[in-house]
Length: 216
Image 1 (cartoon, rainbow, N blue to C red):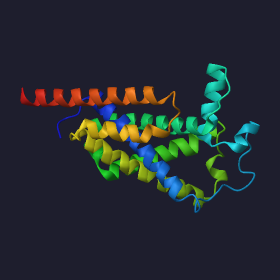
Image 2: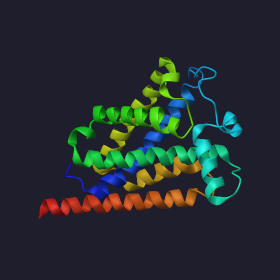
Image 3: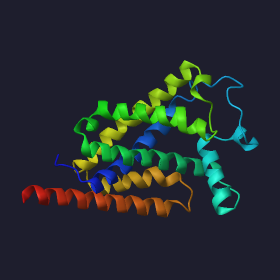
Image 4: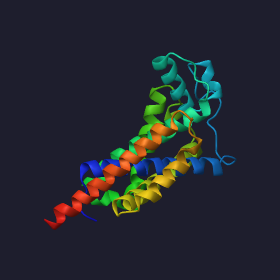
């Protein structure tokens, strides 16, 4: 693997983050029956709507209502979009780190990054925005369950990042992106896929530039 450029690393990380978010969704679906729940009274929702929403759905609703000044009708799909956008955002950060520190590119490095995402997101960001209880109110089994999912996210992140940087055919990644986004809100699909194609173009250009520099 040639030395990664910041632009290529960011693009590869975003794609890898979306893949990691998909794997995390699969983890939640497969373990839904075994998933532990926080005890009653651990979290007092500031809005009545939150009683029937996932945190990602709450974020989507607040964003649409505050910025677009309209009512969100497709909460489930909008929540999925937030989930993937959040995972891709963290993936972009991972890409920059992996492009700088070789140890971050390993599966262990990816898993460690997943632990970091869990620590910051579940234990700081979500409680700070009143989307979940603070960590001291959550029993260890819930922490262990969520931590396990984020370790899987991190491992997928590292594996996908390595695949992108090592030249997995762009058409395969593009096909995968279409499959992942097939259940997103219809209005969001063209934009998501256009951004994915743009990210693939940037990653391809960055990889070509690396080869040119290496041969010079």
